[in-house]
Length: 315
Ligand SMILES: Nc1ncnc2c1ncn2[C@@H]1O[C@H](COP(=O)(O)OP(=O)(O)OP(=O)(O)O)[C@@H](O)[C@H]1O
Ligand SMILES: [Mg+2]
Image (cartoon, rainbow, N blue to C red):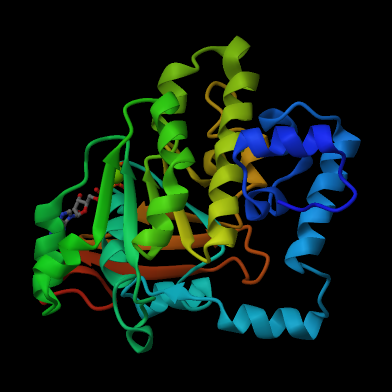
């Protein structure tokens, strides 16, 4: 690593940390300080130098628009749902999917694991999925069912979904830390953490541990966003919310959802809720691109869809 103008001692520390130039360039100064012992001023200089060396320079709004148009999107299999998202789940950002029990969070994740593998002109990214399962709800059988309905090569679909169970928050951190290699080797274009919140909630109990919990949540969110940007992949995390939309947005006094700081972290937040029969409503919040809107879709045997089977109308 070159890093012109950075003193030798810091270079040595960077070398020992095994951080790559890309890792450094997409870090925040606080992240870097957590990883190596340097001052804030030094961290900022190191990051700027790394960014210069990689040629990450300011762009015009027009260049930005062009780059945004090229960013990948994964279809949800519902055109109405895709519509409120601006084409599907976007790469290079973190999307939070929140909702109550049975609202369809995990079903959406399964559908995305299949859809990311589709050709570009069918709403996919011709890439693979990595599913971090904290609740042991990953169901290969359900993937088989969904893929079969769509006439896809079932075995190939299953082969391209990598699953890792995260036993606790510590384990979640260690999995995320080792993702660089597999993302590159296996062309991972979708990374899922289902559910993101559960271990944090069960391990960091009580008001006195709330600050620590928030710090950890933010830390892992930063790491996930770095991966999304660095490898041009979509990151989706789920979050079970017991109550209503207000609680989703602001947290309840007893149990702040993921905390106020978190609310500003994901670049997209989607709230799912049950409606009649197999229908579900998705509502988009906090998008910097799209207005707050709702979409109606269905969770059926075939997976997510715009149009239900006729029997679903009456169930
Ligand atoms: N094989 C299937 N055929 C039709 N609908 C199904 C099938 N499997 C699941 N569903 C629907 O999906 C719902 C479960 O949704 P899902 O598992 O995504 O909920 P969730 O939001 O992840 O909930 P939790 O917070 O408990 O994890 C079921 O209640 C059912 O309506
Ligand atoms: Mg679930």
